[in-house]
Image (cartoon, rainbow, N blue to C red):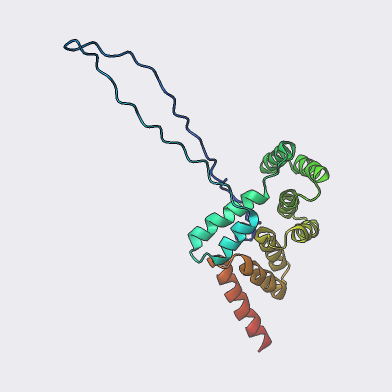
Length: 211
């Protein structure tokens, strides 16, 4: 639903790459004037360990403070990617299979894969959000809302799910409910210019209806 989608992050967090510097032995150069040239020792500079990834709490605190829209979007993408990443490789694989099947319009298979992920880890917010997105794309709004409610029960600050709920309420013609959802969204993600514009427009429309 364009901007009313669940805002699944399209960018993945950067993966730190450690480069290990090796040492190579070299033959000494030929003697000149009876003296063997020597090579000055190279100082070894220890590599810095990769920065520890921020927690969701830290990311959301940054997101609430950030006022630059582009910087805020990067933080939001990282938060969404964090929510969508499970410690279980099996669950991550099931979610990947589900996303691939959904992209190929094999919705039954996509639902089966994501259902398995939820069965394996019922408290994994990423799987519930992905299933809500899938149900929405299939037009199953009631089931999508049910999954969104589960997402928000597990993580009330999940701005992607809140945006999805706002989108469904808009599709249903509930402008008042959509406005409240978008206002809730902006409490978590205040720098989102599109959401700001939607709130402004809905507020004007509702004010006009009440006069």
